[in-house]
Length: 532
Image (cartoon, rainbow, N blue to C red; front, side, top):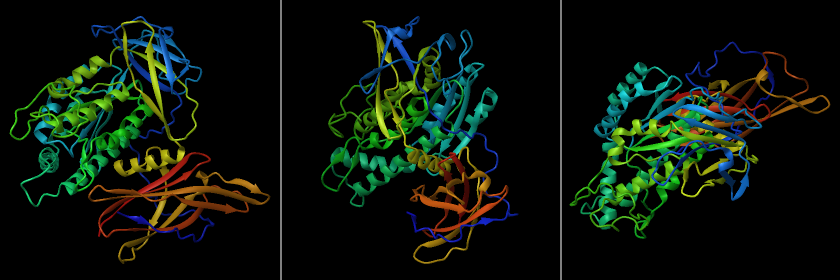
């Protein structure tokens, strides 16, 4: 993995405008900037027979955060995609603009996992989903991305045109899926974990488990980056996750057994990010019912306790059950539903029906930026009725927020909402690792210079550098403080020069260089690629 070296704190002076062309990103199909103030809850209420209940008001609900009751500051009922009632929040800056009697749109974000899925399984689900895009309402929209294990490729930005979306599905079906490679690891690991041995003396279960863990970590980063890349579409926000059997148990040592909840911990940033941004997750298990060696497939076993791990239920594919459990958790944490077995073939139809009628509640937390998770509990004050909603939200610090945004830039090739930063990459110095000099030309028009004492002005910035190698492994280098100073305010068009360097392995890398101004919240960034 690449590692940083200390910054070379060389010349920091006001510099004349450069004639060089910036390497910053060009116009992009989406540039969402995250600014979450109101936490929105999509609440489904059903009776004892599972039928939706309508006609309720905010007085029929109790809302608690970390077991402390708080007021409902925003309330709507949505019935068959139309706003019925509206009670605005005190601060409506992050509340969807709804008008009683008007259609409420839903933004469907489709994420296709190509790392764990096999093409025939994936394509069967995609072919069933494609015709359903004609069911989108006039205010609905859809975007599609696919993750090949290294980068997230956008197949369609937000579109309301079914004919465009059908072409995106065709492109998705034609893409390569890498699940056969992953499947070989899973099958070998499955045999080892079920029998605690393998007939193949060359099979290293600990190594295979580690490689699968790395792949699952890539999936988690890709999904969270996608959510942040599409952070602020209008209307209700829904993500359909086409998953390829994400494992939950991993071998933690050569002899001492398994960690039976490692997978759900690796995937937890997905539901944390979804809850932060107001997305409801609908994971789709594209593999369908699987069989185990020497046994028949066992469909419909949804309530078996998998905490005992592999081999605890004879004749049952425990790996499949654990994969279902990870998807169930993602759905439950965000108020969605996991679409398992045969439900995968009618997945989009089911999601459309599930997202047409609900109550939309909102509240404004006391944001602290402490990176803590906060539990949400919504109760209905009528016996015999049940509710389904997201269960938590995360209060991110600005430092973590910035790190995740830079990580998103690696996945998509640009930093959403950033302004261009001119960077000159110097000639690498070869050694055990390559040392690459960087020269930043910082536009002072985009930097906040503050007076610190008479005749002196300063700006305290953060330089973030992240790299992604050919295998899909990435590393965020430690933030580098950058201090700019001068005896006067900069003139329009002036630049500051800053030099540093990074070290990385001698292989192809993508690199993101981002400069952050904490005072204004401004990002400047560029991306580059190195091939040796």
